Image (tube, rainbow, N blue to C red):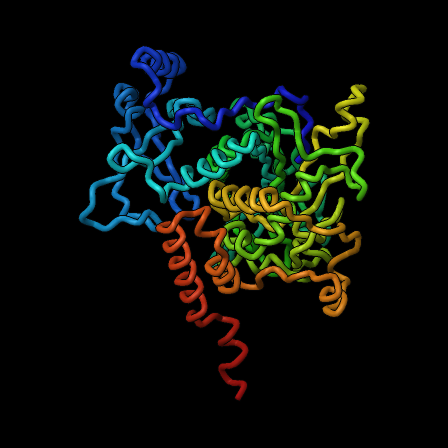
Length: 488
């Protein structure tokens, strides 16, 4: 995802801004309500996500907008996983973020109102959005704004009896990446989605047919991490809703087909100065030759140091780890990382530093020197993640590297898939977790996980994911029946 916007022209996210209606006067609330009514809004969805990143809400008629903005809508936390409540406890109140209220362009009678959960007017520590906000506040104290872009990959599928298959039966190329015919045949759906994204002001840069049949990617403009997490949550909701109108399903499952490339949600990250908006990751004088600053190297080192724990949130399902393999795609490559490593414009690493062409920076020598669109990309992330928790863990790890002045060593400029175990050991390269079980145990053993999540959410996340793995592990699959039933 390219950061092509001019320095200083990006979103002006204030980490210290109120995340509820507390600072919104009755006059301002009435003005927001009147504007929504004038645009045809009839219902509001005060929304949050559960621990899995799945959107939850109630529908509130616009007549009660001010009450909803003040936290009128209550949710029984015991009804959902990962919110840490028992059935006898008082409800959690959702306090919408007034700056994030959005009219849904494909359902214009509805306004989306993401916000934060509170308990008796105090922030609820197990709210995913609040967890991310704590890390953003931590970054702000150091003078940083965390910018994030997410590359959105997914499949369009349909049901064929008991099977799930790619939606387009004519999309059968063995190497389908960038296929124009496959793209054009789904243009009606894509055009509708892209149009709505641009109406929302997300500024879609490009979209394409991905490596596998009926697999696509949409890239839109980066923003501050909280805004991007809000948008990604809405993106999944929007694409699912619109796909069903077109008679198909969009799936964000990391690996829906064993013989096809998995879907990713690469995180493109940079830190900017809170004072000036300048990207702090670029340095044209980088002695290692990949154009990034000492700060960026420290950030990378932090993520690599905590790579296993970070991946537990970035790849949060049993299925996620069927993507993080060298083979398993009939195109010849999975394009997924297997090792905790970094390099320059090299897609076989967990962390990639995309090449930036100084020519796109314009004629300003200072901008060319700072490489204002420089970023680091984590390629391990998949679309099933909770964007708030994943961004929080990623930022928490990066800041840990900065605060401890860590260095990741020199980038590895080789195809990581081709290195032997001996060569990997010589370079000190660790392997990414191979299963959800390995990942969640690494998460549980890393002090950073508890620091970022907080005690209650940390325990809940570990328990839920251990149970998820056990539920999968104790399920007897069709593969096992075919393999072993009469073998012995």
